[in-house]
Amino acid sequence: MIRVVIVEDDLRIAQINRRFVEKLEGFEVVGIATDEQQAHEHLDILAPDLVLLDLYFPDMNGLDLLHYIQKKNPLTDVIIITAAKEFDTVREAIRGGVYDFMIKPVVFERFQEKLKSYQKYHQQMTLLGGSNKQVDQEGIDQLLWGAGDRADRDTYLPKGIDKITSEKILAFILGGPEVLTAEELGRMAGFSRTTARRYLEYFVAKGELVADISYGTVGRPERVYKRT
Image (cartoon, rainbow, N blue to C red):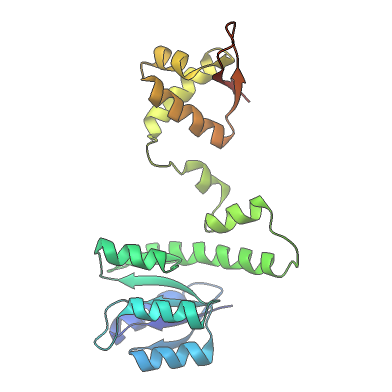
């Protein structure tokens, strides 16, 4: 069971979050704290696996409690649930090591999605931590991806990569020559060389292509891409 402490000054919202948690198999709420003193007591005595933390309190700043958790309870993970939308606040929370961040009001479907993702992460962390061996790259990738399913990772698009454009370029790659350069792909697909290369490197990262160096007839090295 994943032991959860809810830190929320609005008791009505805290009870809603409790009911949400109790609907999910594998989780149990072991405490609710509505102020700083209760939060410290719950953390120190209960040592929960997960804290659902608001950021706005009459007597404290939730970010300060986040830093306290990181210092005093480093094995406790945190998911922020708050109305705060300021970029600096979100950035500090992320830098403070939160697992996830939800903006109020939170519907159950999103709540469930976030906690199920955390549950996979927690299980993977427990498994790797109890294996008494070094962690390989696959294990690290699973942790960094929040232990998401392979399908989730395959549909993730990094910054600068558009789904429709990537599908169009992939069609050109699969229907074109076995080996091609960014310049050749750009000419075929109607994109700039820079854009073509960005997508080619994306497909290399996904395992659709492999990159190599060709020195050509005059010895000038050129990056080429081959279908796998």
